[in-house]
Image (cartoon, rainbow, N blue to C red; front, side, top):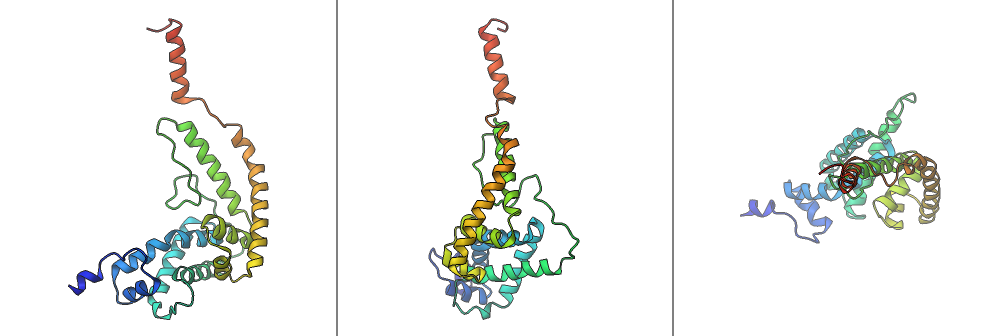
Length: 229
């Protein structure tokens, strides 16, 4: 019976202390719960520093290995997510320091992502033009975020994309709350300017009317004019 209880999913509202104790006892369900609750945040923080999906995923894995093998060091002075976030940031920064200066950053791939920075509503399958336009806008925004200086990029990701409050962001990034506010304001301004500069070519293709919609309208008009039965 004890083993069956150890593998149950934690109830809603379970605190960090309970999950940590269960993880220390090698409860797989607790470890999974911790990872599922933090995967997206850690990926986004790591990617905010590295600007590379593959490396960010590696950092998240390294973060969990380091955290779960030293979980007895977690004292609960801050939230578990905050503790993990700090480890992820340190891991990512360590990779940056070990990179040769001449190595160029790889750009975000033009394809589907396992973990996307900004989610857009999915278009219907019969409207590929609109779906393509949304993907283009998404790429523009993601590239613009990537191009923010690191200090501003991390504040923007934590505050806007992850929705953390000022105090939590300040704690994770080891900043004063006033600095967080100032950097967020500056990050928004830089991002807005960058997106506006890049969005022009994309806007020219806004409100597309091609593909199946164009064909349907053409067929309907030809039918009404008597060209087809």
